[in-house]
Image (tube, rainbow over the protein chains, first blue to last red):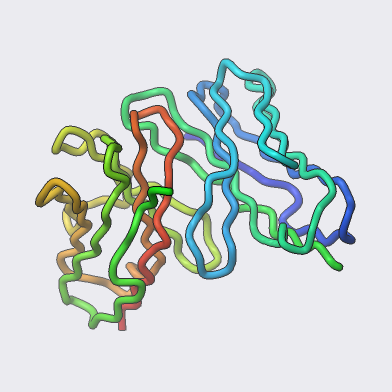
Length: 113
Length: 113
């Protein structure tokens, strides 16, 4: 059974700092990995999708990398801003038609002005 | 930008009652999903749906749950006889193809009293 772990569970940084969020998964037979942002009491906003054949994806100040063989992904946020404060979730998609996503517990990020 | 919508945003019901949660997926998407998040816990997969049938379901999705696409736009989750432990945020998601990026709705908070 796939297990997804995110470390750290919470992170507080000053504005402007570059930061890295970590995600690890136990079963490397994944099809893709998706990073989401969740604001308190709200839905999930998709940030980046990495296919298993890719090493990284970039969107603006965000860069996600994937090392499928070691079961790891990182989300790099450059020049953090207070508006980046949220919970960041990673989810791995399984290799079959249904593509159920298995989620990690999230990293709660606070960026202080 | 197209988005997934869900109604109602909050549903309060008595234990044993039936509830129907409604979702309108993105119009050109073919795959639909339900996930739930119990307060303070991970997001959990419930079911995926394609071509008018369930393509995958989790252990949580037992006989008290059912899904339906009653028309060309709506996708519903029915819980036949609600239990206290069904209290959670329920998220609908959709994707263009089965292995593509999943887009989530804002969620329905279900409270069972």
